[in-house]
Image 1 (tube, helix red, strand yellow):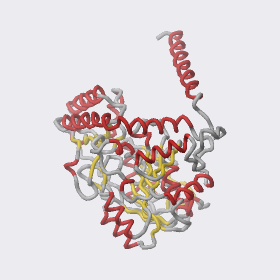
Image 2: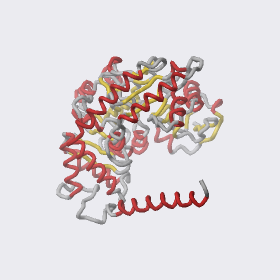
Image 3: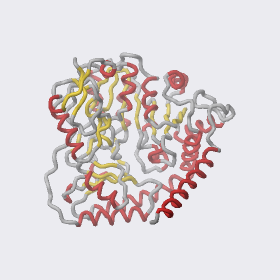
Image 4: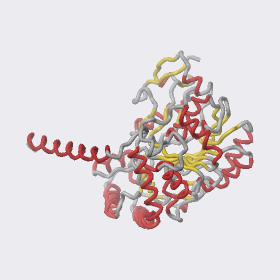
Length: 463
């Protein structure tokens, strides 16, 4: 392409973006327009308040709070409106790292419940009622429970049994259901967390519903929590006073649209996913699991998640992801063994058929099989000091990772995606942790929170 053509193409793209932003700006009101309402007060008669009530009715809960900053602050605020400083909180270890912000802010004492990892499937299960019961028996001082349901791979544990365990001890349950916001719109999806006695459920509606990025909601199952929730909203700075009306509109309109047309739209996606899974399982070297894998911690399943085990092709998941991206096909995420795909409302039959065709092509290319390194989550590190104390600890230094074993981490590092913490600041660095993180990095994964992205050095605390 000639330089003059390149400039014209760029100019056209810039003009299109500019015109789109002009249209968006007409809707981008701020908190200074009181007739619209606000996310800082409970105002049921304003447009925002009525839209909140409509969302709450659709999900079948007393109250819904919208976020234009994603689910991260909702997870933090959910916990902070239920606990006091120094409380003990039971937390699913592979929860999103956003929960650690609440631990630091309130000086909470985390007790982790680690779900079982399936070596054969290469994914973690959900927490079982037995695992939760054991943790509660060992820590009767716990004042809240924070769980993830479903996990990134669509695996749903028995949420009713977990909620019953929490309710029997009068301990509030918070559920990060980031990947389940679409389950309200078709009867064949697994049971929703808010249908149990979970006190607060958070949803990343921008992930699987038609909402713009950062559009999320918190569903509150008890109206008595509303005043306290708004205290957290107003006093702790997790909600911007310049919240995005554009994101709010997309959130409210998307949920309203699904309340009318969602069953029809998702029915077709069920057909796409079923066909794709059947076709993938016919390809030598590939496998995509479904409900036939039901086991403890795997009670139900979101069929719109296609987890494809590529290890039988001689590839690792990260490599398969890279190859697909070269062809213009973008998986949701990859791990050592698997590559994950989502069948969303933005996906049609042409994209699904092309995915299967590409997977057939990749699997047909000859390559030697190899023994994959084991990458199960390492044993839970020993907590030396609380995360809040570690965050404010003044005496820290950087050392090579090889010499960090036995030292106390000053960093919270997660393998991303999915974004769950492998080591939390204040925990002792084990050799297993170092080897796991090195393996993730070497195989193409990202280490979120690592001060050295290459993971050659790490910050430690001089304790």
